[in-house]
Length: 267
Image 1 (spheres, rainbow, N blue to C red):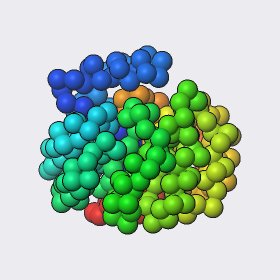
Image 2 (cartoon, rainbow, N blue to C red; image 1 turned 90 degrees about the horizontal axis):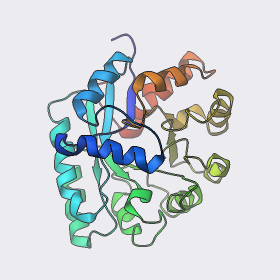
Image 3 (cartoon, helix red, strand yellow; image 1 turned 30 degrees about the vertical axis):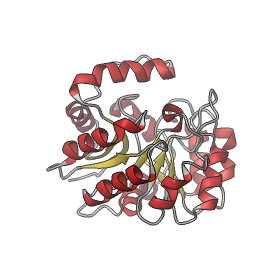
């Protein structure tokens, strides 16, 4: 294997709802989207762009969806050495349901949790969500959708509050820390437990802006992500390749940081 590339942010859906889910996401963000949200489509198109490994997830918009999504993600990654899964959680779960869901995630070797506050309609720093962070701290990293100028649920300042309150909680602020709110990301400075992915940001940020943010926070803090099916792997790789990075920096962002962050073995 000449080059290792991990897509750390990919959404997948069961076949029966994959097309509908893709259209729904496109409508939510006002972006025209084609293709499928199925795992096979992800693997096929990622391979064409040179991507070798994937971290997949699916957000639970209601608490009732959590268990079925976690079973779907588990079934999707089983027997695939290059695909890893993030579990779903929701703040509306009861304490007993939350404990059960986290036990399932850990017992089945899912490597973290994905939360999408805008879809799930909760503030990142809502005290009810703190029950999730208390249980995940020191055990499960959390990938947070962060930032959207249309909403305040996932504002960068809210994740910075959580990161301070839970210093042992490993967090990823997706989309360079704040989709369409990159002027607010300085609130993460000095927070050792907050990391970032490159997904759904390079389409908007200039290469110079993206490089400046990487320099500001350090290349050890960033992981490559596509936000499939929002974007195709080929276009995201082309955008990433425009960044003025050294070979060592590219290796860290394309796979080494993710291996360390998620403690992935056998890569």
